[in-house]
Amino acid sequence: MLSRLTIENIALIKRVELEFSPELNILSGETGAGKSVIVDGLTLLLGGRYDKTLLRYGESSGMVEGVFDVTPAVMPKLTELGLDGDDILIVTRRFSADGRNEIRVNGRQVAASMLRELVARLVDIYGQNEYQTLSDKTEHLKLLDYFIRASISELTAEIDEAYSAYRGVVKELEALGDVGEREKNIDILKYQIEEIKSAGVKRGEEDALKERRKLIASAERIRNALGAAADCLTESGETEPASSLIGTALRALGNISDVSDEYLELYDRLKSVSIELEDISETAVDALERMNFDEREIDRLEQRYDLIAALKRKYGDYDKMTAYLSEAEERLYKLENSDKLYEKLLSDKKELADRLYGLCVGLSEKRRAGAIEFSRLIERELNELGMENSRFEVRFSDMPERQAAEDAMTRNGFDSVEFYFSPNVGHPLKPLIKIISGGEMSRFMLALKVITSRTDDIPTLIFDEIDAGISGIVGQAVAKKLARISRSHQVLCVTHLAQIASMADRHYYIEKKVVSDSTVTEVVPLDRAAAIDEISRLSGSKNITETTRETAAEMKKWSDEYKKSLAQAPGQ
View 1 (cartoon, helix red, strand yellow):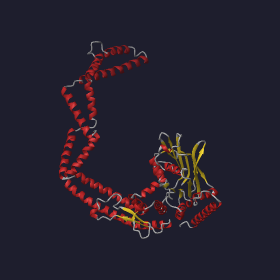
View 2 (tube, rainbow, N blue to C red):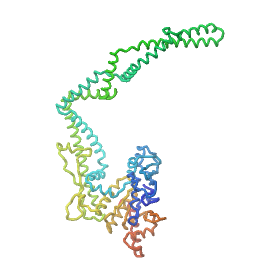
View 3 (cartoon, one colour):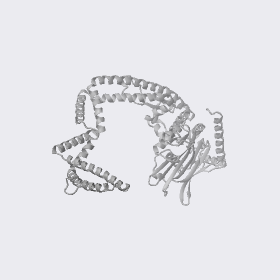
View 4 (tube, one colour):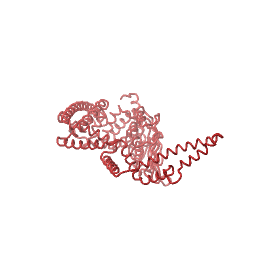
């Protein structure tokens, strides 16, 4: 449930803070006062796209924040998204003039997509966009499936699994191709396998070749350095070598090593240097002797390096190359044994298609049975909303025969449905999207919400323009429906109808004012007397008089008594 909404610097709103009733909340006001801005703020709170034109003129930043009471249905999604679960959920969205915006849930920054996933379990908003979805017949099956979701959830999961397996086999068959294509692929795979195997590339070989190339490229510089070092360390040089000088020093220290521990330590340390120097000398000489490269070795090294580089360009590095080799050998085996494999895949395809068809038939039967109840309930609700002679029907495409079904089967079965409607006695049923009026569409959407709200666990419902195209006695019927829904769900409704406004458990008046040479939209909570005045205004009176006020008071009293009757009979 949405307990509090704060909006700052959206359109004409400077700042408003609204505390909502858990039942029916009404927002009304003069045309152009800013009722739609409240809905815009709510839309942003629900993860809608931010447009910087929404920002109040002259301001650099704005904000919308909602405080929600958390329901058990939301807790798994909070855990899934890695958010702290608590009894209260605070959603804050800040935005700026440069188009940037930041979303936080309980203080943690989240993406708009995460916010949408979360609030989808908290709030349903019904505005013009939602009405338009009913005008798209591809949405009709989704609406039906949502109504019967409890009875088809396991079956749709089975269909999804079966369809994935079926498509996998179809792709394998397509990969085999015809005989000519298979032979061509066999030749290509054999060549690639032989190319990789004959190369015999070893892990780390390319790096070793790079090091050897680097060594050869620096050969002259290395020889000079090693030669100079060897001359200084060994007897081969023209000057007295370091080993001879150290030997002389050792003999000198040896003569006094027995005098004190200090001289003995010096002798031992120099002895260690002598041994290390001898080892360094031998290593340098050996390295110098190995620095002999012939042209044949250099040619072989370059050829090997070029070969590995070429293979790498074609197949990737060592790991990718070996993985490709394994895959190529497997594909070659399948192609060389394609006759048997083809027959097996055909058998698997038929078996999976048979199973998938059976599941789709089962789903279609459940949908057709559910559509009867769905249609009955829609007609009942429309009847109570002033459309007594309406008829409604869900029409299905013909169920395909098994042999013709393969191209029609999808993850969602093979059904195509469309809603048909007739608002008048003696008139045939026709496609709803072609004949329904704006006022009828509003009532139809409300009827849908009434029958689905009984099983919904979404706590808050928002209706914008639900009263479009209706008035009078129909408006009263709509008001009664909203009151009924609000006994089990929190309802926020933007309206211009007095009948709906009179049902409010909490009523806000939206007005536009000029304050300090600036136009602002303010939202004022109405007490009972002010609410009666607003109901009088909404009734169409140019001036509020005692007579219009009395009529409005009677309307409010009747609404209160109706809501009390709902409390006494909660199941109705």
